[in-house]
Length: 126
Image (cartoon, rainbow, N blue to C red; front, side, top):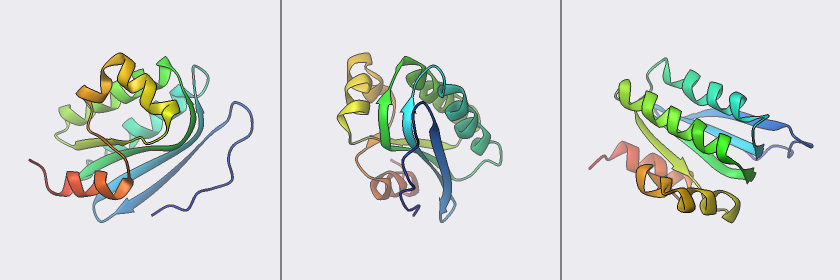
């Protein structure tokens, strides 16, 4: 499991990639907005190319989550489906859960409160 790094300053976003067995976990820290969403999108989609058993977008360190971040998640989910890779999102903070719920993406995406639960859900699909 990744350890929580020092929070980014200002508009910066920090991305940390780790593996839990064959599942790739992309932990995102900071604000995900128009400026940083491209970096987030690139990290998520880029980790799909080696076709891991699953991909988890860990948003538990996100302090702001705008519409560009929502778009990045949808794009990663669509690409994961094309590659037959399980995709899950970790969201427990209000800053992320509210935008997911308001847009209905919490119904489209597999959203879990912890990385452990997300990895477990990928490891034991329905």
